Every structure is written in structure tokens, then in C-alpha cells.
Length: 95
Length: 486
Image 1 (cartoon, rainbow over the protein chains, first blue to last red):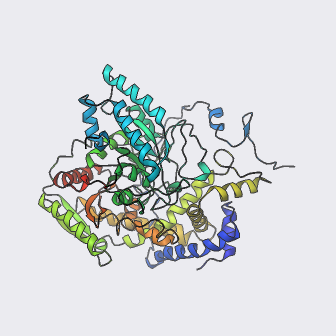
Image 2: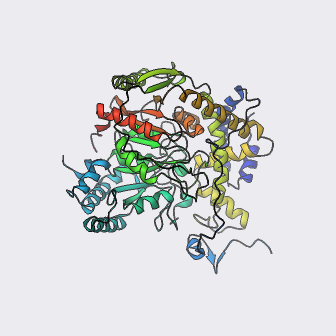
Image 3: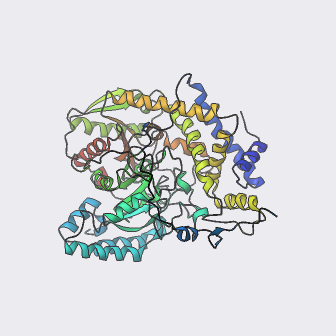
């Protein structure tokens, strides 16, 4: 199936990705050509094939439930565009 | 011709051991070369001159006191998606253009612990998405063999910096070919280890089930030294394999007598152009002269690797890149009117167009109602691809093919056609889907431009790949050729 600009707008909203109208128009053709590449998958019969999530199917490794990390809040918050008194600042959400 | 920067990583190691050079002399030589040539090539985003000179001085002290490791004082540079404590880490993106990482990636801390001197951070396609290094917020990298051409990507800065002798060793990452393809385009050697061999801790994630850190250098021997340093279990990466790390340098000199090289018939069909076929035949002749035999094998589903990759990788990327929201780190849009506006504009203004395309594709593929048709189907095909490789590797030691369909293309040639760019990775993507180790090594030049051949081995068989490539390099001089102007 082929995408329309309404699809692109909806997916952009799901991804919280601001797109200009010009970007939507430009990207639409490209997304459709990518999807037609992807659709080549449908030629393969995969009935009964178990999906492979991890290439080597290693089992998850467990570790001891011990505290290993130190508190580095201040260091990590230094990278924030706006933080104060240990809080990340964003525009007001609740009036 | 006696420049320090002409020496390979292994040769520099020897010079340091024999004390014919100091780390300060080596570091200074590379820094000076970077300063004079980087403006033309754009391989480095950040050069850490002061820090490098300090580490070099410390290395020389350690060497004189006898407290050095085998690698103390040797230079390296890191792809700019490995977090480096206190140093700008951009991932080639506007959204991280002001991000100073607060910790070191596992690979970086391993290198520091061994006493390596980091020269700086290397340019790349934004978030490792690309095959040409044109998708960088910091501008395209130029190929030292022809500065009108791309160096490949996404580890284009790493490959071009090694080719131009701005560093003897560089880290890279490979999700669908991002170490091997640029190695082929720049006449360097590159290894993508088995998934799980090298910890992904501190590597900014693109597609977590495919991403793997590795290296680019001049020779297989250099890679063997470097891989020993960065491989091994790390409890901070839950997919890191708990397996011991062999001494990769120990097996380099093993004979290739009796080794079986598999040629996938799908890589050598009539789509392969004649000049590339001739180059591959010349490499195969050397394999045969060293006692290896060649058999035809089949990877039945390899053609579907690219379509399935462009579901799995964007799907994982759309999830991984949701963390860039303008709140905790990175770029924030000016004067957001509300929280949604902050998210949408920070991401809309912070990401480049290829990254946006992949986020959109991934979000679409994972959105309600499409899971079976896209993500599940792609993971089923992934199993078929993995099974093909396992079946093939039961009848051969290594799988051989060209790394790329052609030599490096001209900057701008493919940028407006994403699908033609994606098809650049037609020979490399399947290896990532199967999680297997792969390397690209120098093959004969075509019309003055480098080419590469690719070796794929069994899981954790990096030493088999490096041994074979080293034997070829001992018998040929393709890896010794240098770009004329660099």
C-alpha cells in the first residue's frame, strides 16, 4: 500500500516529530519508495517460521542485585538544556 | 619518506617498545598532520589536542618507569558515537551538537585503561544512518583517494582518517555495513565483530539488535591488536557475550592450507560488474595459491536482507531515538509554547532528513495493525537468513564476496535517492542480520580507486577472518597503497 500525506502527518505525531509541509511532501515520495523496497519481503513464505529477535539467541545474563552506581545526578543534569534544584524544567503542563 | 604517520599501528607499537620513538613524538606527528589535512577531509569533529598531549606524556613516564602495558602510548581516534567523558559526543547530529558526555563508553574506557592516546572524535553519518557520510550535521567527509568522492559510511570519518594517516587505528560501528563499506571505499581494513563480542555500553544506540562496535586500521594485524583490547564481557551490556577473548595476534600466521572458502552464488551472479568480478578473482587466486580451496555455497534469502533490515533497523531506531526529547540533554527548540511543542520542534529541528525518514518508517512499521506485515515478517526473514549462514558455514570456514557493488561514488550522486543508497549495503547487511563477524580488506584497485573483499566467519570466529586476511596481506601489497595526495 502507498502512504498519503495524512499518513505521514499521523506517524509524525506518533513519533512527536515536527515536520513542515514541505518536508511532508518531499518525504512522502521517498517513504513510498522505501516501503516498496520493504514490500519485497512479502514474496517470501514465512509460514511457521519463529521470529528471530536476537541473532545468537544467547540467554539473558543475570547479575547480583547489588548497588553499583553512585549518585551522579548533578553531573548528568549538567547536560540538560534547563535544570534547576535537581529538576528538569519544561513548559508548564498543569495550569 | 620516513614520516612517523606512515607507520601502521603494529609498526608504531614496535617502535615504542624499541624506544626508537616516544609517545609524545608519535602523538605530536599525528596531531600536526590532522591540523594540516583535516580542513580538507573533514574527518574529525573534535580534536582533543591538549588531552592527547597529556596522555602521551603520562604514557612516556609509564614506559620509562616500566609500568606500561603493551599498548601504552599508541594513538587511536573514536567514532563520535562512543561517549567520551568530558568530551563533545555529537553522533554527527545537531540534536547532540552541544552534548558533552558525562561518562566513557566501555570501548573508550578499555582503550584508556590500556594507555592508548585518543586524538579526538571522528565524523560520521548522523546516528550512524547512511552509507556515504553525507548525512552529518558537521558536513560530508571527503575520500582521500579522490576528494570529490564519498568515503562511505557511516564510519566514514574513521575510514578516511586511517586512509589519510591521521590516525593509525580508529573505532567504528557497524549496523548494516558501516565499518566494512567505508573500509572498502578507502583502502583500509575493517572488522565488525560478532554481535555481543564488544560491549555496546556507551555507544549511542541506532538499532540495538544489529549494532556492533569494531575497528578500522591499515592491516589485519593492527585489527588483531585492537580487537583484543576492546572485546570481552561487560555486565553493563545485557547482550554482551560471556566468552573468553582469544589472543587474536597469536593465530595470524597460521597456514591457509586446507581452508575452505565459500562463494555465495547470489553474490557472483550477473549483477556483479566485470571489474569487481576481476578484482575478486585476483584475491581468490591468492587464496588458492596459499592452499585454500573454493566451493560454491548458497544464501537463499540474502536478497531479502535489505528489505527486512529497513524494517528492523528503523523500528529499533524509532524506539531508541525517542530519548532525544530536548529535556534531559542535547538541543532544545527556542521558546517552546507547551510540552508537545518542545518535543516536536526540538526533534524536528534537531534531526536531519535521513534520521527523520527512518524514525517515520520505524514508527509506521510498529504502529497498530502493521506488526504482522512488517516487524514480525522481517524477524521471520531474519531467522531464515541466519539459518542460511549456519548451513553454509557447515561446509566452509569463511564466506567470501565483494564488500560493495562498486567503488566510491561521487558526493551528491545518491543523496536524493535513499533506496539507491540503501542498496550500497547489499553484500554487508545479511552478516549483521545473522549476528556474525565480518571483515573487509583491501582488494586490487579499480581505475585508481580502492575496493574491498569481505570475509564472514562463524560466530566468534574473528580470529579465522583475521588470520586469512593477514595471510593475504603477507602475500600481496594491496594494503600498502596510499592515496597520492595524502
